[in-house]
Length: 111
Figure (cartoon, one colour):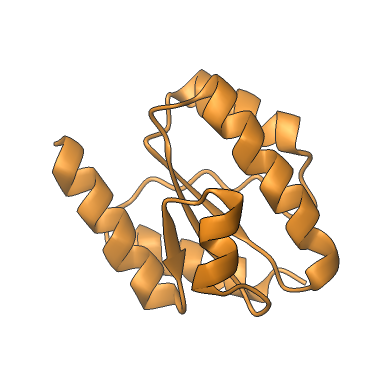
């Protein structure tokens, strides 16, 4: 399910962010292409089950190749800081509000 993603989306919107929600189970190539198209400065990825973290790693790989400017925040029930570091994420958010704070930090740094 995508409850966590939806909570983060609502919080980000409440804090003034323009959020493009690509849905769930989105192929890495689709995410990378959309980030390039929009020149998005930040992307958030979430994983609820261990079976989805492999796709997350591939998504980060694609983003690093095609959108090196983009900062990547990851979170979700099965993730840890250690795993986020291993797959090359810029930030690991342990909860939705931490994700919002990281997004604010990233945007403030480039503004």
